[in-house]
Image (cartoon, rainbow over all chains, first blue to last red; front, side, top):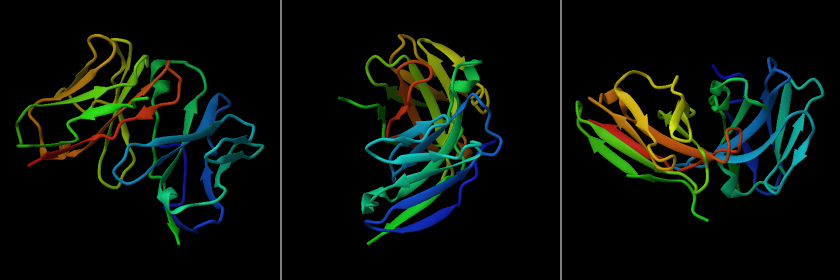
Length: 115
Length: 113
């Protein structure tokens, strides 16, 4: 079963920041938080990941709470092309067994960026 | 550079037929994954290869599903005696190393009539 909880959908205004929440209250100390997104009719696309520190790249920022039980993905200036389903995933940080390499997707958040 | 490619992009078959779906990973990527995505749901893991061997096939739903990666590069997902419930988008992903970021292909949409 997916180990994360996300709102099923949210709207965002073009040009504004989009803040996507994710709850992962059962996360283990050796698990990363990963974010992927899936634009319609395409395969999922990696966005960002983090362990406990906040992370930023050219696509987004990831804010992880101090207790690591939740996180927020921030798209700083949403564009129409950011309309997609966003998946928050927890994944083991190092190999314990082979099964830890897979990604376990939940339902994601369907984000609609409106003009 | 070239990303992950999958062929065919669409496959329509009849119930009971055999199908093969192909994945060409990014050159140099040692890890390869297959996922299946039903309409309105997130992708579900099927099988993971590290090199030529299947390191984890726990997601294969039954023995009608089989995958190979004979030379550690291209992989083929094989489905025997297809059923209507097999209709889905089959996604392939590859990564450099076991824990690397996974890059996904566009998927193959399989429709079983």
